[in-house]
Image (cartoon, rainbow, N blue to C red; front, top):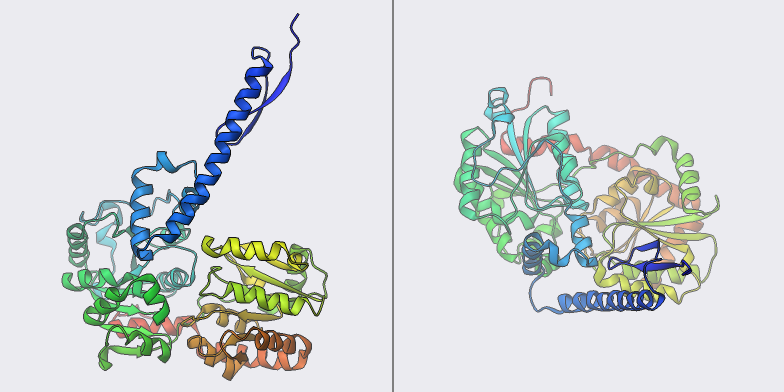
Length: 493
């Protein structure tokens, strides 16, 4: 009688399936295992080679996104086994929320919106977001939608110009129209804009310079646009959105900048008439629920990270990119950790694949890698801000990052590079320390000073907290935007 044996057969997706192979001979099984392992090896190297080739293409990031979007949308069955497709799909998940409107561009407002129940035209408003990724700009747009809808009781419609994790959160607040310029015909978008005007939507808040391409279309249809510009010159060049900047300058009713430095650098690409230009920092769109319970937050965060209660935490939140200075963050961490054992560094946010391998390779050889925590994307960062001791804003350039306000909200002082953007002067004047650009030694010394001087740190945190409460109320910010657009607020609001 033939002996029954157990073998592990690896399928083409890399999933082990332990099964009885009584009907297969050992020689055939070994051959199949070898072929599958060879296939997985080839696929791994192809994936790495494809990433390198993609990174080296001599075209703008915008053109790359357009090409990738159309390729993945139309031929998913070709790429579905590869990691770069999975990464893209994570950022562009399917939407099942019934409030999302998926009709093709150019069709009329669907019946389910109940046109008869709409508020007066002066209380109807559109919010346009460049996409729904979990980054600063879309989070600000989401906060604006929430305030307009829930706090001010206005009739809101959302236009998304790209996908992302936050789609369902937008859709939970208001009907959402997804008009991706990579998929949609401009003629269809024009017809769609005209149908919105026919139903009384003649005002729009358009978020970020990236969204500038839609401003002329909305304006020509009769929709007045207030544009929120957040990008500094480096980002505008890197993203290849110089044309969008010119479109905003030409067609927007008003252009709102969070800081003078952002307006000055925008002028390098497009001149905005002085009567159309407003300098107004955004408000703090989410208050920290841990603010009255900071000690509990500190204990809970350290328990979650596996740290002792007396460990001091240096925090950074954001997309781990070169612009955000994730490499400088690591250099600073290694500088400090080489001298003291009572500190941990924590970065909250997704990786940029273009820099991730370099950072991880560097940390793999470090004695201090276990005290530098990259925790990935977290939809709620409140406990990280409230439980930290110092916020490290290592950005090379950042127009006016909301993370500074979030740290100030819970009395956490900030260290930043001078001249890095609109928040740097606020840090220097109100609640932190600035050092010369990209000077890691000085940055590390400033962090150490705050960690070692609890009284000095507490004084900075207190003044920062009071300043945010007085000057950065989000409701006041949204009310100003409504006033600029001539939106009539319901009685009692």
